[in-house]
Structures are given as structure tokens and as C-alpha cells.
Image (cartoon, rainbow over all chains, first blue to last red; front, top):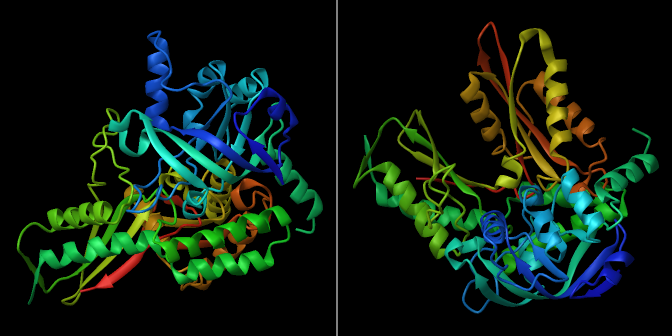
Length: 186
Length: 280
């Protein structure tokens, strides 16, 4: 199990391989469908992103509202593929890590290789468990989007798996192939 | 004739929305634990162990099992001798969903227009499915449906000549295309027969059936077993990381259809297959 402290530098990204289990600590940003659309529209108008993108990590999540006394509600990953249309633009602007679940398209994987980024998977449907890693939670922009607002979270030892590394290796291919190779009794 | 004030429906639905999102049904829990024991890949075992921890934290601390607390699918089986008073039944259902999602700190995940978007802010409207049945009771089931898995669902108007092999090929194609996206291990609801729309509804209803049950007809029970085995031989595994446990269950529901058709719908659900029922 590798421990990673953010920001996610190029050096750290280069050291990670598809299939690695990691514990991530530091500040990350939350954004999903509507937030990504807004960020890319802002960039197209020549405006800046509402956060410092360099070596940053975006978590594709729309948490439930927190109960009194809680930092955040349930906070597991959403399907990343819906952000594929926007992800290469954000990587070009400096975002180095993405946390989500599910397949990415060919353009995103090419951008991951080009900009030396990492695509991490969090366990989909484990929002209660993942919420325990969140130590602070602050709205940064787009609060009118409710669950889709851009938030800055401090996470401690967030359990993740490297899905696509900066060389383009993909755990969804490798993991399945390895399992079938080792369990060919079917 | 029995009179029921719709405020009773509102109250029941508020509670059912909250409970469904916090407490995973026992049959799903047992199935996940059972599959954890059977799983032969260490990576997959680790995922399943975290999924078990997750539903325990959800129950213990009152945090929704998943942040996608879904669209509120509300099934109403209404006895034909029931007379509702106190206002519109539809409004009463939506008021229950509104209160449940606001008071229960559940996520509001509904947009008012599919193309123009815009969050409605209270998770309404509910998806309401009504059925008139014999008797004077009302059976309410709330099944919050997440869209990670809903987006991976498909329907196909198969030809009668495609036969059962056509059904198997289609189901396996849907699972293959879904891959890691619907948060496996999944529950696979299959509808066969009816019309285009009824077939999709059968698939959704199939997801309400406990995963430790089987279709009442021997032919379809055998088909459920065969498809489950085939799905669990794909190697997709929990979260798509590779492993045995790609699905917890395959539930098939059927109905008569036209001489020219054999519709087949596959509605996928994730391991957080939630539903809660109350009879009034």
C-alpha cells in the first residue's frame, strides 16, 4: 500500500502503476457533470478556472448533504465516463489526477499519457465508508448547483486503486485478464 | 370500501425513502457476505470487504449507503376497495419524497428537463408506478434507483426466432458493455415479453425480488442460474478489478407477448439494490 501526499507531482505520477493500491492524503476538488461543463465554458470564454489546477486532483462526486455534526454526507465516486468530454481540457490546464469509477475513452487515456496524469478508482457504492476519510469540506464555486458544486476537501488516507497510469496501462483490462488466466477452470 | 387519507401515504413514503437509503435489505447483505467467502481473487475480496464495511457504517452512523440516493421509484399496489381522501394521490407521493429527501439529508438528483437540465431541488417528481389489485390495502414500495447502473441498462425487441439463445446473447452483451461502470457486483433484472414499455417495467420489477429467490417456473429458474454463472465467468469482478463476483443475482420476470415479438429488457442495479415496503 503506497501513501501519497498531495499535490500530485509528475514524479509521483510516474511512480504509480495500474493496479497499485494507494492511500491519498491532502486537498482535492470535487466536480461532476454540471461543474465540468461550467469550467470548460469559462475556459472557452478566456476566463480562469475557479481553483489552482496545477498538480491538482479532481474527485468525481456529488455528496449527500451532511447531517448536523458531520463534515460531509455519503461521498462515493460517480461514473467518470460522463466527464470524458471535459477531462482532456482540464489535464491540459494542469489537473494531474482524477478519482472516479468506470471506463474512460481513448481521448482521455491519450491525454493521461501526454500530460503524465493518473486515473484513480474509488469503490463505487461505498459512499459511507469514503466519507470517513474527509476531514474538511469547503464550497469553492458553483454553489447554486447543489450536490454538483465545486468543493475543496481535505482527505486523509483515502483508499484508492490506480486504474489508468501515466503509461496508459488499464487495470480494467489487466485485472480481468489476470483473473481469467489464474482461474481458467470455467 | 375503505377510506385512506393521502396524508398517510405521504408519511409512509417519507420514512421509506430514508430507511431504503440507510439500510440495505438483508438478502443483499447475505449475498455480498456469501460471495466474499466464495471469491477467489484477493483484490476482489478486498473490494467486497470494503462494501461490507460500507453498509455497516451506513446503518450504524446514519450515512446513506451510496451518495447517489437515486430517483425515487414508488410502486403502489392499490386495493380496488380503497377510496383516497384529503387531496391528490400523486401530490401526496411527491410530498413524501420531498420530505424524505430533505429531512433525511438525501441527495437531490432530479433535473426538471432532460435536455435543458436544472435541479428541482427536492428530488421530485417521483417515478410512480400504480397497479390496481384486489382488496382494501395499499402496498407501497420505495426503490431509490441510482443512475450509474440505470445508464447501463438496455432493451431489445428480439425476434421469436432468436429464441432463448438470443436472450442469453443479448444479456451477456449488455453486461460486457456495462463492464465496471454500474459498480459491480450488480443485480441483473430481466424482463421478457409484453410490449416495449411493459417489458422495461418487468425488468425494473425483477430488481425488487429478493436475490435469494428464483422465478417460479423451472425453465426460467434454470435460465437465471445459467446466466448468473456465465456473467460470473466473464472475470469483470467487483468494481471491474477482476474476480468472480460480477453479479449477485439474475432475476427474470416474464409475461405474454405478441405472436411477432420477444422483447427483452435488462435493467442493471449495483450492489446497493435498495427497496423498502410498507402495507397500509
